Image 1 (cartoon, rainbow, N blue to C red):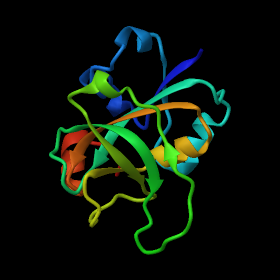
Image 2: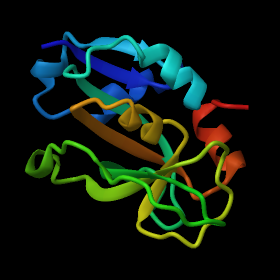
Image 3: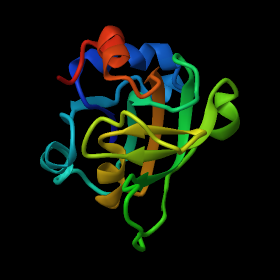
Length: 163
């Protein structure tokens, strides 16, 4: 079965080693794909991958209350739209579970822009994961490294990423 590690930007490559991926040998030969940031880049980068491929998305995320440097194993992803409510499917992810005892498990909210404030706690925010999950991959894992507490300045200091 094909295995892919999905990173938004090349600067996130260092997170692969930092994460200490469980069953590391299993992922050692996985192909790394740089998707770019946001929905359009995700769709273009992943539209032709087989839906039964094993995917591991690793990336930076913000959080309103998790400490910077916290690792999160994402269990579910949703879009972040705090001003309106509408029905959406639950997008559950595959989890490594007990293999990641040092990781918190949490929901990830995907946004089309950087989140600078939120009342949502005990979760992380990114700009790609819901779009990856919505493409219908059956074996999708996600590990997020908290880079900031909803501060674009702190994010830039740590990652030198998205402008």
